[in-house]
Image (cartoon, rainbow, N blue to C red; front, side, top):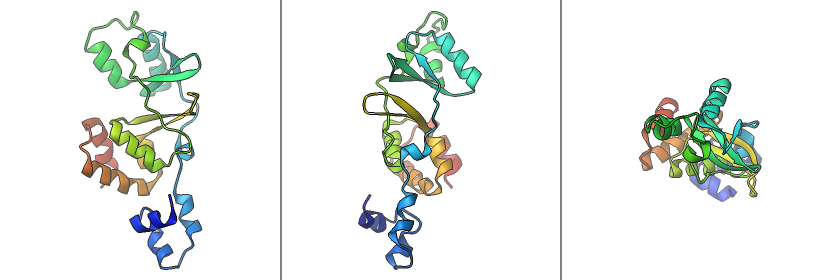
Length: 183
């Protein structure tokens, strides 16, 4: 993001002070966070050929709401609580016989570590997702960020979330996060 864009759009809390010459641009730059600054590392994964029952056990054991699905060392999908509800429970599938690859969300929508946090947030809204895996270009999983993490981590992102939610009709599950964190 260039200084001119940042100052013209008032994307950061200190831009007015920079425009008036009271602060240098160096005060603004550190506030532009990258995905790698926020992502959680050590993401719990599961093989695409594992059973849904194994996925449920892993999610319960780790008290998490999603697993990244792997195949041959590459992130290929994601399985969330919503996937379990819609694609297993609602369809009365047997979790002991159904494989993760059958119900995972694919293709995997992912961000890259050097992506601006604001761009990652926009991608999440555009794709209507709350969880964004972070991968290298060749598919190696590096981490995960969630919409909740973004809202909690960087207060100025709340302003961006508010703008996005006003322009885009967010699904109910995303709107709950926005309503909770955005006043």
